[in-house]
Image (cartoon, rainbow, N blue to C red):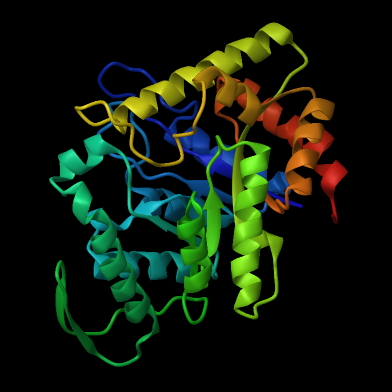
Length: 341
């Protein structure tokens, strides 16, 4: 298996509540150390208007990280296409891919947080159509060596050629978040890689990977487990009280995030923060908190479900030096159990 990171930085704003455990500079140093510890890549979120200081300018942050690292893959999880000019985004992403030597993992989605669509004055019912038009423009921008024009429902571009060309050809690696069978098969149809959320049960993970593998192989493509990125929260500790406190922090963060995706009439929209069932039970079933052996057993169940690329989120650690020590222990005591497997 390969291991990567998933998460966010946070800067104090408004109430001073943190939605993440790492400040921006701390997040950079955390990822620099992760590279030295053998982690394969990192995925960073994009969110806006939270009041918690979550990362909003993801490509800017990853560009800074790319200059500090040599091998760590630089992932977006995800760029929400309905909010971005697709040509400007294509240019920015290609620049990062070029400067980093092809290390960009370009994760994309259509968005799910109600408050963000309201903030941008973008109608949620237009999100899917705007996503489809945007990805078409981005892919053409990356692959066309000739000037082209585009006249669409949402965007119009006249006699353009996008510069620079990305390092990776024909374009950077593209990842999409998906949860149901239809959307997972759509990811395979496009030839993209799949991102799965951090709250799904091992049984749901197995079902999702099976659907994706079936769709990939039906196209005549070889199966590669590294085409699925699965996120799980982790915290290495033998202290029962410390584990309970970490679980409480994770649950509080999730409930706060769900409020941002809730419409005025009480509907909770889709996205990686949503999972069916009692929130406490979902939290317990999806978090890998405990001793190295306990965490290894959780990972073994995910490997049996078909997972090959596990993205760990250390948000439950409380951050700071305790979070760094948890990362080091994970690399030292857990990752070697899954080396070359």
